[in-house]
Length: 320
Image (tube, rainbow, N blue to C red; front, side, top):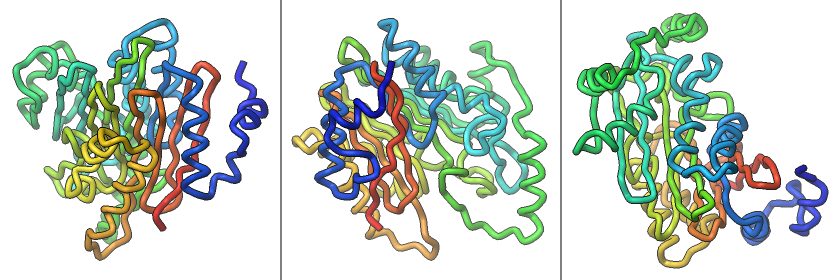
């Protein structure tokens, strides 16, 4: 049974005192010593990481774990930023993006997918059943139907009401926070020491029709290199794409940087992006050793972690 008091005592620091880079690095390093397997995901996706953990604790493959975890928010009508229940674009269409990578360097992605509840599973089929990496729009939908996925109406009553309210002023000011974060990215390290990752989203609410963010872009929203580590992103996709965020974190880890310091360095690079509105980006990462990292541009970003000793919600540090 997970004993939070014992665990925090063993790391010599409490969550409330995690105020500096060195302290947070110490906490992440101590946490990682629990050994594999482990799962880390963006935001407070507790049920998702628990579902992934169920796969890993029985000796399952990291790829199966991250897919299973990502499917949880995809099917949750109360999650307004992923899958079923996701807020639509400004024309009233729920469009989904997702990508997945395995320990062999294989990747699959779907963009602008409509009426299919589980884009992460379609992305895996793209990876495993086609010679391609990305399928988009009507082609992705056709492929999903051919693979046995069912067409469903993903626009919930809650999402429709939100769209109707937005149309009164039609002001596009995407707010990214713990309530409306636009992505789940999930990374797994299995008992064999293999890494995989998944990233899935319905994108920013009331976006222009056809808009695609970072989530399905290999190297931006997600990147996995089984020799080094894995990283994934959440937040304003346009900013992550411009900095190829996840790939940059893995490359910094390749040079020996701790995952948490690599996430901070990637977040710092966002400062050069000029924007008329405030935006948020958060990164998480894990290396081959099982060391973890999380950092954000602004306060409020969280990461969910689970290992053999239980679940922890990390309140990540930020540049601002």
